[in-house]
Length: 253
Image 1: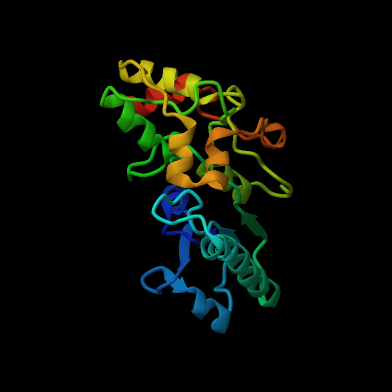
Image 2: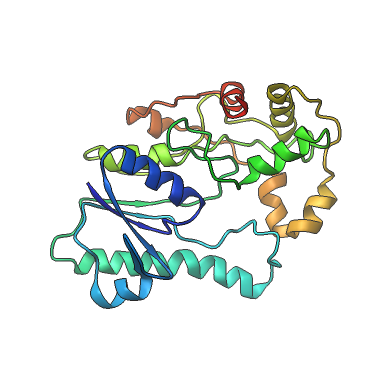
């Protein structure tokens, strides 16, 4: 397929691009600047959607960017970066002479690394997993508040590819691994420490998380959602690592 990916140069976008190309698909990115295999958002608005079979939108400001204060301006940027890019793509699809047959919108916040090949790994650094693993491997804290939140192990690249390649698939596909929908930070820390052969000693206090991210964003890390991927499993998607322990051991290995 010919796939156009909004936000394809970002964290998840790079993993998805690698996966799609490894499966023989052509990928064109939409980003701030044009270039090889890439068009700009401005070019998309003026010239329309390139001929393609599928469109994915991953664009959006990083909600958990610790270098940006959680104020009105940043909130507007978070919303605008998602809503406006989605509107632009939706209009381009509606105006296309030959519209794509698949349209995937990725929403929500993922806490663990997506993977082009093995669900939970990616060559490039980044993401919450790196934060935890650096802490544990240096014999320091690995958890936030020990009892909460319920943290799903998020998988995105493989599910997006599955959605694109599956005919007549519609609706919401949750990317939480089926055996780990209720994993607390404390449990995550213990599992990661065990995989690394290190102790998980000192939990990071909630006040420190609020100090770094602000009260509203800290909710995403200190509280959780209990999500089960019912529709994802019913659609025929196979999780390579359905449980946290196996995923972490594969990453560490």
